[in-house]
Image (cartoon, rainbow, N blue to C red; front, side, top):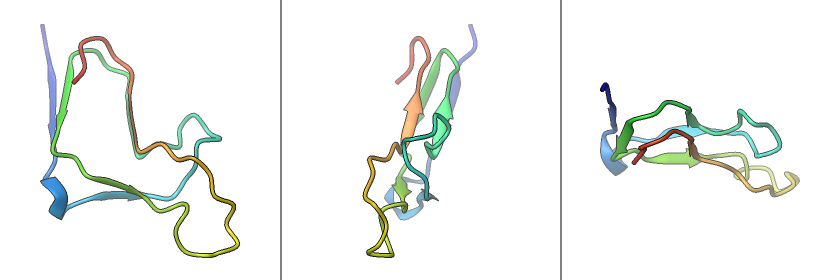
Length: 70
């Protein structure tokens, strides 16, 4: 059985994205694979930052939907 191991660089490096939940593809990182382990990944969704006129929305940072994921 194969396994995907995704290791980030901790809190000193982050993945940034500026989108919101109204779209199914709005997360910074999406995994639909089985047997994945993700470790030390820092994410920042910038959608609600910046302009005060932006309507605040719920945001998804990371979405993992696979069997045997951690």
